[in-house]
Structures are given as C-alpha cells and as structure tokens.
Image (tube, rainbow, N blue to C red; front, side):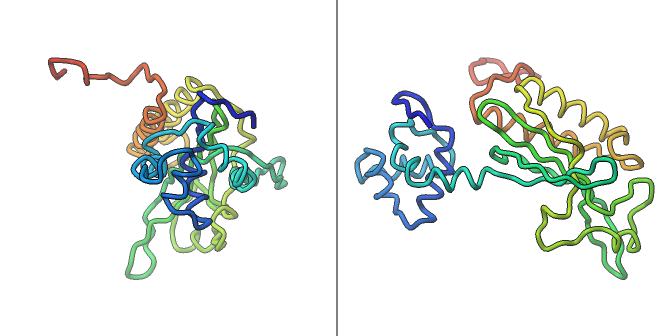
Length: 233
C-alpha cells in the first residue's frame, strides 16, 4: 500500500480496533499516530468510526497490522452451479448484513428462522452484493418444524448459506439501483417465492443509504434540510 500524507485512510476504524485487540492503549495509539498522548478524544473518534485519520498517521498501524487486516477482509462463499458446490474467495469489508426471517411454531413456542440474507462488501470505491439462501430451505413450501429439520444448522453460521451466483463489482449508483429493485421484488413476493417482505426491502434501502451517507457519498434521493430555514412537509 502506497501511503500518502494528505489522503484519508478508509481502514482507520479497523486498524485502531486491531491495535486495541493487540493490547495498545489510547495514549499509545495517539503517540504512534504522531499526536499528543493526551489526544485520546481523537483516538476515540477513530475507534468509533466518527472520523478518518490520514494515511501518514496510520503508517505504523498499516505496517504492524496490515497483514491481519487483509486476512480479515477475505471471505469464503459457497456457490451452487449445475448441482455442484463451488467455493469462491471474495476480498472486501463487510459493511451490511440483513436477514429475512419467518416465524415457525415448534411445540408451544415460536421461533424466527433465518431463510435468506443479503451481504454487502466494499472493496475500495466499489461494492459486492451477495444474496444467500439457507441450505435446505424450499420456498415453495411453508416453513414448519419438518422443513426446519431439513435446513442447515452448522455452528459456523456462514457454512449454512448458498450464494446466488458469483457477485460482480458495482459502482455506487449500480448498487443502489440493485438494492432498490430487490426491495420491490421482496415486497411483491417475487424475490423469495410465496414470501412477502414489505419492510425488509425498506430496511435494506435505509441501511445502505445510512452507511453511504456516513462515508461521505453523495445521495441524489436524500433531501438535505440541514441548511433549510423551512421544514418540508
């Protein structure tokens, strides 16, 4: 990684987290970043994702924890193609995970079982959207205790899921269009046959926009009233 003095480090939060996991205090982090040891408030802002450090400030942490960071950015997906399972490696930061659950009665109690989930990864300025179905889930049937027993229940949660195709890198406008389309299909019962998820799609759209807004992306369909004297009704 070529370090630039005036460029923001997008991995600030993750690097600070690794530093803390490796026993460094806020005061030590501040010193290694070239700040005063008393500048713990700034370190807290980095740790909480409220601000990004410059790459020159993260020089020590990139050198010290860069390999760990790269390993944590590697994800293994299982894809079914022509009746066979394939494994693919995806590199990027997991920024959003959203799950569709259905209520299932088991004896005298009711549980909510995850049947589908969406993962969004960021790689530099691009994104992956991964759609996954739970192994053993059959959308044409209502989920009951019998189908529940046929679903995967591995202790390693990621092993329970099959990805729908191999994801492609997307620009910001592409990922927003795809998520908006998925939201419509979820609400109309077309994305997961026989299952309508009106609010799941709305939540997915909101969570993506909230993340992009916090990261400083321009969102054409978000109305900014912070500088307006009158409130829009």
